[in-house]
Length: 263
Ligand code: CLR
Image (tube, rainbow, N blue to C red; front, side, top):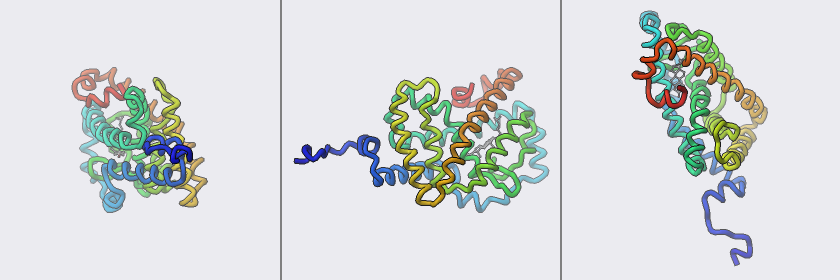
């Protein structure tokens, strides 16, 4: 009887990705939001409480007095930590782990930095243009010794503009899942499969924005995607420049994951 009615035994992947009913989409959003919450280094309330904890003049000076390679190494370690949380987030997106290993790696290689930059906006205070770094809020001047002021300015600018959209944690969670599930990334073996997983996450984002009565955000979010791509390209360009000057620092002191992703 069941089979004549088109009833099939429960198959989590099918029920999530083949028949997107509004219940499935709700479950999918809830699951992505939970994954996001479990993998952000700091909770929104914690950050709110620390909002005005800024570095002193002396502390800023100490960062500015570091050598170029010392500061690069320090930032590379911090960035790699952040990337590691994004990898954990990706693994908890329903459907991600069912992709073949090659495609999981390809998506993370090109998408994890983009997600870090979206997440940067949660750690940003637009009132004084500072970002949470080493347990306090830091302005662009703190990163002077990296000698890549244009990159830093562009990253801060991006965070500032994204922050101005005032995304909820739910909206950000689903948006970052969408940034990762990009079927146009290079070196994907099974683009159709990535596209199928992505399709439901797109539905989840529209659904959330509809509930929040903020449908106009969708277009604004999609507008940021090419900007993210160019920022990541600029980061890689700066890393090449740095590697030419300090090949040994990169080779022996940078985190292996950082080199694997960007080097
Ligand atoms: C982004 C959101 C993550 C936590 C996090 C960790 C490291 C931070 C990063 C955030 C924002 C950007 C950041 C970075 C460390 C260094 C980097 C402040 C807050 C600055 C912009 C320097 C980049 C230098 C490269 C050239 C290596 O959840």
